Image (cartoon, rainbow, N blue to C red; front, side, top):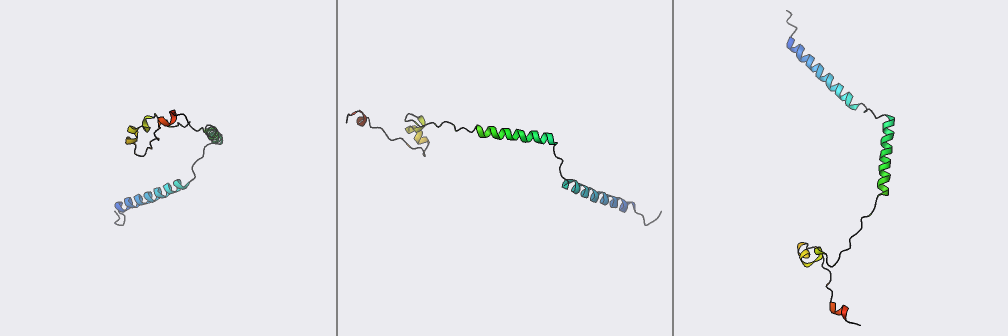
Length: 101
């Protein structure tokens, strides 16, 4: 057998060639453009998105605002202690309201 031929070097060489070839193949496949949907599917998707945007624009409704009342439990003295940032309504002096001018 010829001493210049080494099976180990041959196997390592083939493994190196395969590894470099696979790396180049994966790099090329990664840079290729991705396939697009068909024109029909693309148009259907665009139409669906347009309809949803129009519906969202027409359905923008402000929720009714609840006006705070004096007998609201969160505005009472107990509620004000639990919420330090809550403001207390001014007390109503009944004598001023019931007296005729």
